[in-house]
Amino acid sequence: MDSIDSFIGIPILISVTLGLLLFALLLIAKLRNTSKISVIVFPCILIFFGGMIYAFFSQKMIYLIFTNIVVEFLLLVYGLVLAVSDPLKQEKRDKNPLVQEVDVDLDALQKEKEKCQKIINLNKEITEKAASFFKEEEALSGFLEYFNNLIVEKTLADGCAILLFDDYENMLAVKSVTGAFPPPYKLPEDLPHKPLRIETNFKFAQFSLEDNIFGEIFNKGEPVNIIDPIKDKRIFKNGPEDFLKPGPYLFIPVKGEGVTIGLICLARKANSMPFTPVDYENAMTLSEAFSTALKPLTSFLAVTDHLELTKEGDIATKFQKSLVPEKLPVLNSLSIGKYSNQMENVCGDYYDIIPSRKDRITFVMSDVAGKGMNSLVVMIMIRAMLRLISNTNQSSATLLEWVNKAICSEKNSMDHFASVALINYNSINNTAQISTSGTCPVILFKASDGSIDKISTECEPIGVVKETTYKDIDVELHKGDILVTCTDGLLECLNESGVQYSLENLQKVIKANCKLSGKDIAAKVKDNIKKFCENAQQYDDQSLLVIKIHE
Image 1 (spheres, rainbow, N blue to C red):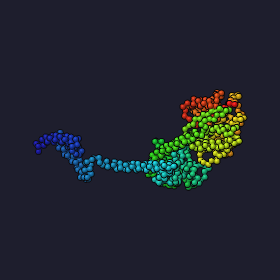
Image 2: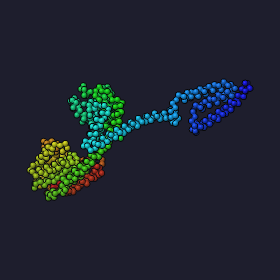
Image 3: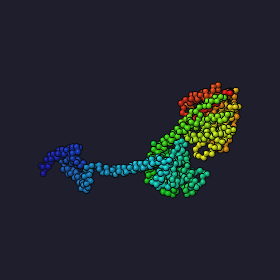
């Protein structure tokens, strides 16, 4: 045995050499992926090699035996795993080692896909519904009412209010309310605590962007779920009445293009369960769909309103031009000048010259409040009445009072206010009787001393109070005297620095050109205004009448 053991190193070296060759071949196969080789094989070979080499140098076979035990233990564990594993799953893993992870990701992906599809369908449904209101007269109100009812149903709220930001007023305005909505803000002290009065007050309420919960949440632009309104200091407690007791609230800012444009305010009655995470998620999804649908609707309404106003303004402008005298009458004792610059779609100014009687010529300058067809209707009424009554023996003030009573009797929602300067000139005794309402001034230049003054006084416009009385101003006129009247659009026109033209500038031009005819004086005023305003945009009609006495 001793003689044989003395040669044990030779087979160990041969085994190590063959083992190294085997390890290299298996490693190449693993790297080239030409065959499926378990990773456990490689540490087993390395451990076995190490044991044989150590046994060779130490000449102690015990280490080779220990090495064998370790390798067998590792292979035993591996065999146990193979024995208890599912062959179908093993085959699946062999085909795709990542299949287990992919299965988990696919489940999550499927859920996310279903959620996204739900959101897409909801956006489509609400946008289509918004489009169906395009043809309605109250399109925005109808859509808001529809959405209000929808979100109350989906979130199980007792009430909902939608507030939209008015950038002109810089306020949040209530646009739609449904169900029971206990007011979370301080009610006016003089408002009776009755459900109908509270509800009506809220429907037409506006809120500033500070000192109330609506403005605070709007400014922050983040949703707020109020679970306990009693402890929340932002909720104002208005009274002991049951309908005033606050319950849970959910406030969701509505955003468009990254900017907060409104609030969706959900409420539940006092002592109700607060809004759950599911309610919150549903409300957020609906609010995003609402924002998506609201943008095209408001854009459509804005374009429609603009087209309607433009169309209406074009018609009104056409009629306005037909109301003013196309040619000024030729009068022996007078020279008349006029200047009129009508802004597109404004239609506020009207002037007229009425040779009513042999001893009376009536000059009218009027500035009607409002724009478009509204101002045109009032303008036509004033013109028709003055043409009918100017040939009477009544004074200028009485004529204005008659017109005022008639305009005040009109029962409609449109503005029907007008400033009017009425000048009755008596060509026989060379006098004028002047009466004014509102802001149309009358200026008198006296040739005798070169003075120029505003002789009219401001008072209530026509159409405010039926009982308004007006004052007659009687003036004796002499050769070279000049009467001028105009609208406030002329005096208030702006230059590029935002400075108004003013009455003083008008008086300077008249005084500097007092030797010219009425027509030429009006032309000088026109040139002076154009020079003063240059390229500044104007927003109101400008009208001027110049009456110069020649005899």
